[in-house]
Length: 111
Length: 114
Image (cartoon, rainbow over all chains, first blue to last red; front, side, top):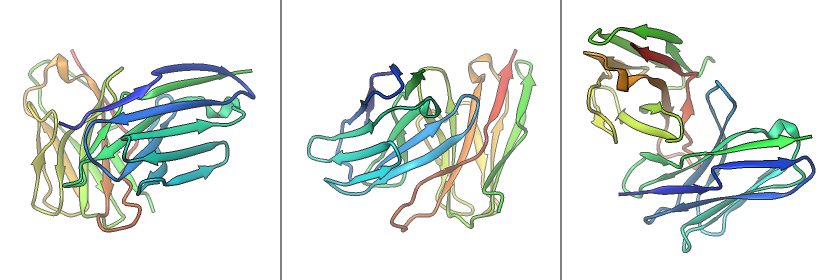
């Protein structure tokens, strides 16, 4: 059974600081997704990481994938209040397209 | 291009009542999914479909049924609602075979079962 774990689950940080969210998964997969969810809203796709060593960046967010370690990171650079949201990683099993989600990391960026 | 839409947005049921949630997508996607989201548990897959006329069970299928009679629609049914089914339900769709086959999510349906 594929399991996906994120840490931390709650993160409170100051504007301007850097931090990293970690996503570990339990079985082989070469495709990992990051989503953002604002309170009361739907999920918005941020990144799709397709292979070992993949790195993608959008604004202050950068995601990477290490398939050998079964680890993805979402790095936040110089956080701003607008980044406050819940961030989910999700992994597909290699045999199909079903996504297994992590519990989510609730990020709060304080002025 | 509306993307993925869900009907209704909110609903309150009494225990034992039935209802159907409708999901529609206009992106001609082959795959569609129903998830539930509960606090602290992320999203869990209820049922999914890999094409018109096909459905399959996900992680938490008990108490739910689905149908995909048309490619663009995916219906989720609760035959006899229970308080444990109080949740936010999200529908999603995706197109396999693309380099970035991300799932696109609908706005969600907030269901309360009393």
